[in-house]
Image 1: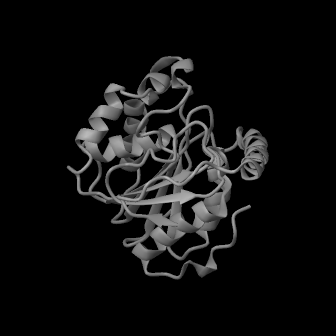
Image 2: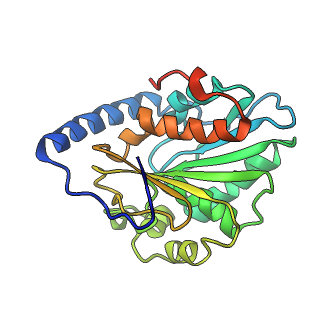
Length: 249
């Protein structure tokens, strides 16, 4: 469901839908726990050809790159599409994560088209990378999932730079808002209507906006609608059909 910039956030989530959302979020936490030990070292393609698509997936705080395994399988089912991931520590702030994105991309040669996808804190980092660093001219778009551009509830409970950067009114959030239009790289914002950590009106000011009904913060990582939006955006750049990508599991 795409929303224009002018459309308001919908009504509160009904009680039964909220109970379903809570149940789905519990399953998402269990899946995150199973995947936590996966893909901690950086994972990059062994080979890429000119014109290929590369999707760099940046996880959120208190997770690892293993959280992206289901979405990676779906993306890699597309033709000429590769994925890359890395894991960072729970105390890392937005600028540190953005620097890690730059380090990863510098190790990847080739005239490929790069898509940056970030969940939660990772979403802030991908925008910081394109707006506040020298970036990489190969980056064609960013996609943010549950990114707290207006601050995250409970961020004050998180120690270190991660919690500081996600607090409402933080220096990082203010700077991202001020420089939003400067790089000319559009963003797709994806949020969940039942997210209790990031308000569903926490959109980035540039680009398209999607609200996934009855989905909470971590549920979005494993949600078919989210995967479909990401896959379709990448497929649009590559000119291949997204139909080959299987449902997320």
